[in-house]
Length: 408
Image (tube, rainbow, N blue to C red; front, side, top):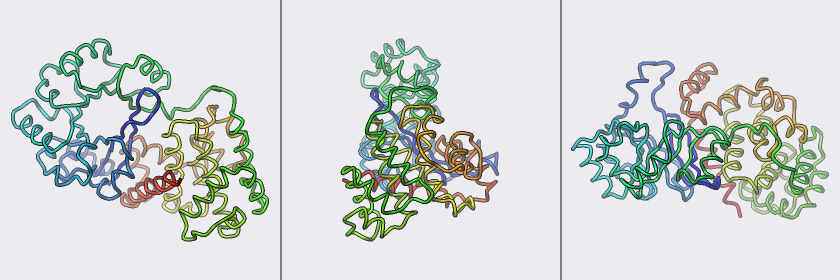
C-alpha cells in the first residue's frame, strides 16, 4: 500500500486537518485497476489501517483527519475498523454515495457512532438532487475555480447552516491570500503552501543570519568537531535543542554538552543533528507545516536512499530533503538561499537544477506527496523498489518527526 497526508489550512496558514490518501492497486502495471481498484479489499478502509499502525496522534496530532470511503466500504463495519476517537474522523465520500434510501439509512447509522461526513467532487448542478446526502455532511469540498463563492455562501448558509466549506486546488499563494483575505472558506487544500518563492519576500531576520552561519560551519567538508562545538555553544537555545534531540533520539541519555555529543556521535551524525536542530529553529517564525514538510522529507529521503542504491550518499540526501523548502523558510528564491549555505554540488544540482545523481529521490518524494500514484509507481518500477518498503519508510518518517517535534 502507498499512503500520504495532505494538510488543510485555516485563514492564518494554520493546519486545521489532514486528509489521508492511499493506494492499494498497482495502476501502472495494471491500468485496468484505475477503474476497478476502488473495489479492491471491499470493506477494508486504507486510512484506518494507517491509523491502526502508527496512531492518529502521529498522523494528525490533535486535528481531525479526512479518510476516503467508497460506496462499498460505507456498508462495512466502520466502527470496528477505527481505533481512533470517532469525533476526530471525517469520512470523505463522493457522488457514488447516492441520495437513495439504503445510503441515507447507512449514513444515519454511522453518524450515531460519532463519525462525520464530507462530500467531494459534487457538481453544483447536482446540489439539489443530493440534498438528502448533504444534510448528513459537515463539510463539502469545492473547486474554488469552478464556483461562485458568494452564491455558494448564500446557498449553504441557507440550506445547511453548519456546513463547512473547503476550497480545493488552491495552488498558488496568491489564490490563498485572496480567498483567505475574504474568509471565503473554512479550509483550504492545495499546493499553495509549498510553491517555490520566486521573489524576495522580506529582509532576513537577524536570528536566521546567525543560524545560517552555524549551518555553514558544520557543512564544511572537513569541519572540526571541536570548532563546531565552540560555535554552537554560543547559542544557548540551540545547545538545549541539540542536546534534547540527541538524548531523546539515541540510546545514550546522559549527553550533557555539545563536546560530549560531538565525541559520541562523530562528524557525520553530529552534522545531521546540528542541521536538524538549526532548521527547526529557522522555521520557528514560519507555518508549522513548513517544519513538518522539511523534516519528513529529510527522513523519508534518507530512508529511501538504499532502495535507490544511493546509501553512501544518505547524509547528503537527508540534507537535500531538509533544505528542499529552504526558500519557504527564508522567504527568498531558492537560488539566493543556496548562495547563503555551504552545500555539496549534488544537493545544489538537485534543488536548483532538478538533476544529478541524488535528484531521483527528491523527484520520487514530490510525486508521492502529491498522491500522484501513477507517477510514483512508474518511478518505483524504474528503480525496482517494492511498495511495502516505501510505505514503511514513509510511516517511519512520520513517527520520527512526531518524536522530534514533541521534544521539549
